[in-house]
Image 1 (cartoon, rainbow, N blue to C red):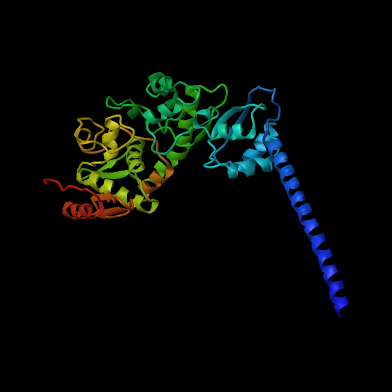
Image 2: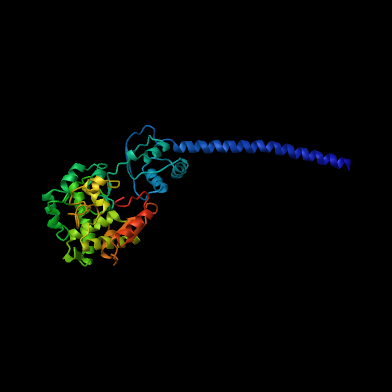
Length: 376
């Protein structure tokens, strides 16, 4: 019995000895494996060719995620491994990629490439140009500064009578003589359709504007034909032109909120127009003052301009922004209401509608922070 215990004790010591000798081996293996993995990872993030400083152009588009970007970079020979790029991008804090064209080099490490792609000032949007719904001519010109096209030339061309006459011949249903009105700020305001445009190497300001007007012709003329084109203005039925149609749609574009409210907002402006009331829309005051952002000041609301609908009755001389199809659809399908007022709530941005000014004041007190009633 005692011999059995001694034998078991010896066997247990042998097992423990074996176990204690295996653990360091396992730990050593894990360390070696870790070092090897880190070495491989480090190798994968080093430059593809340290001696090659030649620029390689890479375009990052709007819908590109890290996987598609990795594919583009690998195809251009700028990174060694797509999966490592995705892992590194995921591990890098606050990683974001900008849309545009970037000049990268094979001598750049993966971290340097990611840093370049995340630098807004490194993105050259020369191959595409985004015209956004609600952008005015001045805003479009400002955004063109990011391309190789001249913003100054653009501002000249949108008022160039000779160029506009050429466009009239191409698009007679869209561009009428109303664009030459004496109070018009920019003849082609509202006539440039919001979209993303490809800019070719031989693109000119004229060719880009022509593409924008062409798309407006394709999109807007059919929508105008769907409208009944007889609006009540100051108590009288009036045949409205496509220019009038676009002008009202541009106001809706700037006042638009949630899509399910736009038809109600359209009804407010059409009702005010019918009764000969001032439209009193803030974006028109901003446009009159050449103000691109922010709420109008009291001085701007009082500005004596045909574009300021706080100062004049009826429509402004022309559109005040580029216009998307949703605003035309809202105008074509405006609700039949008695609403004459609306406001956007401070907290949730929801629109509230009313038939009388006292009702409007009560809603304003309830939903607009810091609202000061008129006359107080």
